[in-house]
Amino acid sequence: MRIFVAGGTGFLGKAIIERLLGAGHAVTALARNPASLGPPAPNLRVLKGSPISPGPWQQEVASHQAVINLTGVNIFTRWTVDAKQRILESRVQSTRNIVAAIPSGASSQPTLINASASGVYGFCGDEEKPEDASPGNDFLAQVCQAWEAEANRASAKARVITIRIGIVLGKNGGALARMLPAFRLGVAGRLGSGRQWFPWIHLDDLTDALLFLLETPAISGPVNLSAPRPVQNATFTAILGRILRRPTLLAVPAWVIRLALGELGSVALEGCRMVPRALLAHGFQFRFAELEGALREILDRKE
Image 1 (spheres, rainbow, N blue to C red):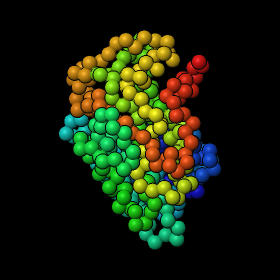
Image 2 (image 1 turned 180 degrees about the vertical axis):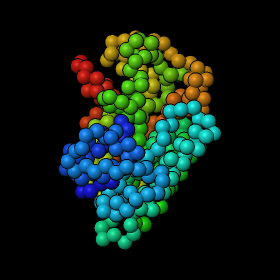
Image 3 (image 1 turned 90 degrees about the vertical axis):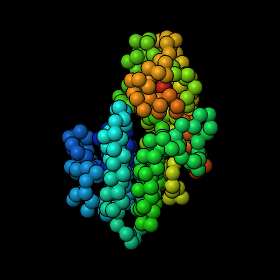
Image 4 (image 1 turned 120 degrees about the vertical axis):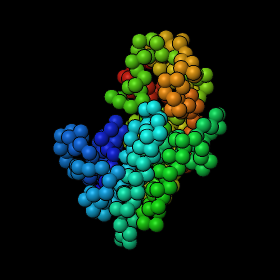
C-alpha cells in the first residue's frame, strides 16, 4: 500500500513510519525538515513542506491509498490566547488542506486516518469513555471536536478514521521521557489527588493498531487508541517507582501545577478513563494490556 504521512518527524510519527516500512508499505512523508527523518530508506520518499499551508505536496496525495495526518503544534506550553490559536489552527488547517487534496471519484476509496486525542472527552471523572461517549466542553475538547469535524468532511470520498490518542509510552521520547528524570532522582509523586485517570498505550500497540486499522475496512469513525486497562495517576506513579526502585512519597499539590502550567494544568489534574471499545470489538489483540508489563519492556527491567 502507498501511504502518505503528514507530521511524521516527532516521537510518534517516526515510529509509525518505521512500522509501516517494516510491514512492506511504501511511504511518502511530508516534513518541514526532511533531514529530521534520518538517512534515506527503501520505500520512503520525503517531501519538504507542511500541510498547514497548501502547496505542491497536495498533488502527491492522489497517488496514495491511505493518508495519515498527525500534524499539530505541541500543546505542552502555557495556553495564552496566541498559543490557543496556534494549537487550534495547526490542526484544523492542516486537516482542511489534506481533505482538499484527496480526490473525488477514485476507483477505490482511500483511507484517511486523522489524529485526535483523548482530550475530546473533556474532564470525565471515573466514567468510562468509549467512542460513542459525549464530548467535553473545555478548550482541548473543543479543539479535538473541530479537528475531527474537519477530517469528517472527507467522508464522501474516503473512509475516515479519527484516532483519539492516549498518553503514548515508549523508548527515547514521549511522555515517559519527560517523567523519568524526577522518578530516577526519587523526587516524583502523584499529581494532585492522584485519582485522575491515565489513558496510556504502549508505542508498539499504537503502531500495531494503525496497521490493523489500515487492513480492516469495516472500521471507520472515531477509534480510541489506549490500553484496555487505564490506571489512575497514583497507581501509575507507584508502579513506575517500584520498577525503578525509587520512592514516590512526595505529592505535587494541585495549586502548584495550576500555577506552573496555567489552564493546561487542568488536563494533568483531571484525566480521562478512555477505553478502546472499537479496537476490541473488531478483534485487535494488545501486546501490552497491563501497565507494569509495558513499563518493564520499555525500561528493560525484569521482575
